[in-house]
Image 1 (tube, rainbow, N blue to C red):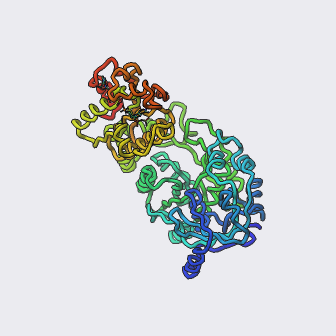
Image 2: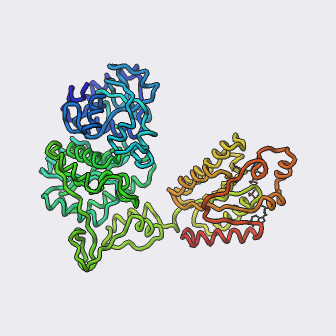
Image 3: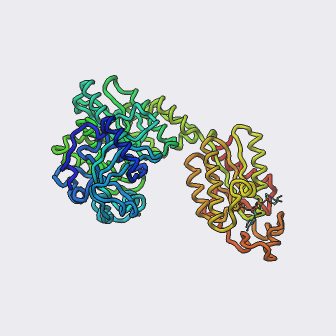
Length: 569
Ligand SMILES: Nc1ncnc2c1ncn2[C@@H]1O[C@H](COP(=O)(O)OS(=O)(=O)O)[C@@H](OP(=O)(O)O)[C@H]1O
Ligand SMILES: Nc1ncnc2c1ncn2[C@@H]1O[C@H](COP(=O)(O)OP(=O)(O)O)[C@@H](O)[C@H]1O
C-alpha cells in the first residue's frame, strides 16, 4: 500500500477538536505506544507536515523504493525512510487495520495510527542504502540504526490529536503552516532556509547575508533542536545565542524558528531531506554546505561523504523538489581589510584569521578575550553565562585506591581547605558514608561495586553541574564505572581523578579498620587487594602514594594541580 494512495493535502494532520474528543475516547481501549525522543521528532514533523507529502509512516513498498531510489512507490522524491520501529512483542500483537494510540513519554495521547503493514526490515540493506556502509564503527547513523532502532517496522496513516508538547521556546516552534503564513504576510516570496546545530558568529552572518543578497531573498534561520534532554544546558544556550545572533541583521529580513528534527547524518541524502523539509516550511532556497549532513563535519575526523556531493544532489533534484540549492561559501576575516571575505577571494599576501570551536571553548574556560571580529557582545555574554571560566565552574575530585590508602583522610583535609576558601559549596561523598546511606542495600560484588560507584558519580555530576565541589572517596576498583563517571561529570565541569596508589603492604600495615587482618584469617571474603581485584586507573590526572608523605603534602599536590588547571586561584 503506497502512502500516497491516500494522499492528504491538508495543512496539518491534527484533526478538528470534535474528532480529537472521539479519538481520545477511542484511545482508552487501544494498544498504546510511548514514543522515544527520536520517534517523537518524526511524529511531530509528520503531524505538522514538515514531512509533506507523507501522511503517515511508510509501508514496505514505499520504504524499499525510498532506500533504492530516494522516491516513494509513485515516483515522488522522498529520500528518508520514515517508519515506526517497534520491538518483536509489539509487532506480533499488531494486525493490519488495527488502531494504535501513539503517546509521548508521559503517556499523553498525540495520534492514532491505523496499522498498514508490519515487517522485519533488512537493516544491513537499509544501512548500506541510506548511509553507504553497514559498519556501525564507521558511521554513527548505522550504530543508531543497529542499537537504538527497534527491529520491526510499522507503516500506516496517522490522525493527529496534538503536537508533542514543548515547554521551551514555544514562540520559536513554528509549524510549516505558521511560517508559510508569516512569509506571505511579510511579502517574502524568496526565502533562504538555513539549517544549523552550531553556534553562529560574525562569519555566519556575513556568509548568510551575502548569499541572501545574491539571490535577493529573506532569511529563515532554522536550527534543529531535536533530541536534547530537557535539562541540557547547551540546548538553551544555543537557542539564546540564536536569538541574540538574529538581532545583528537588518530589520524585517530574518526569521528564527526551531524544529524538532532528529538528524540521521546520511550525507547528501540528508541534505536533500533537509531541503525538502524547508520547502515544506515555505522556503524557496536552501543553503547547503560542502559537507552537509556528514557525521564528521566540523570535527577533526576525515569526512565520510565526498566533499560537495550534498550540494550536487540538492541542486540536481531542485526541479522536482521545488527548492533551489544555494552553496554555502566559507568566509574568513582578513585583518588587513578589517572585513570578512569569501575564502576563494582572499589575496595571496593576505592572511585569514580563524578561531576553531575548540579554541573558543578554551578561551571560555580560561576566561580569555574573544575578539570583536569573531563574535557579537551579546552572543559572547550568553556563552560566558553558560560556560563560565574554570575558576567559577564546579568540579569533582575523585579519589580511588585500596582501603587504607588515604582517600578519606585526603578528602577530609581537602574539604577543610575548600571550606576555608569559601567560594563554592563542598560535598564529601566518602565510601563508608555512601555505603551507609545511598548504597546501604549493596554488597561488594563487581556489579554492586560498579553500581555504588556510578551512584556516587551521578550525585557528583549534579553537584558539579550546579557549580559545587564534590569530593568522592570510594575504592572504585573497576575501570568501567570510573570511566562512566568521568564521561558524565566532564560534561558539566572539572573531573580530577586521583589514584591513591599507596601499596597494599602499607595499607595492610595501617589496617585502621582491621579489615585486612580479617581478610587474611578468611573471616571476610572478597576484600579488595587480598581476595578481590583492584584495577589501577588508566590515565589519572594525579597519582599519589601516601606511604612517603603527610596528608598535608598529599593535599598540597592536589591543590597545586587545581590551581595550574585554573579551577582555583
Ligand atoms: N569486601 C570488602 N572489600 C573492600 N572494602 C570493604 C569490604 N567489606 C567492607 N569494606 C569496607 O567498605 C569500604 C569500601 O567501600 P566502597 O564503597 O568504597 O567500595 S567500592 O568502591 O564499592 O568497591 C572500605 O572502607 P575504606 O577503608 O574507607 O575504603 C572497607 O572498610
Ligand atoms: N599522606 C597521607 N595521606 C593520607 N593518609 C595518610 C597519609 N599518611 C598516613 N596516612 C594515614 O593512613 C590512614 C588512611 O586511612 P583512610 O584515609 O581511612 O584511607 P581510605 O579512606 O583510603 O580507606 C590514616 O590513618 C591516615 O592517618
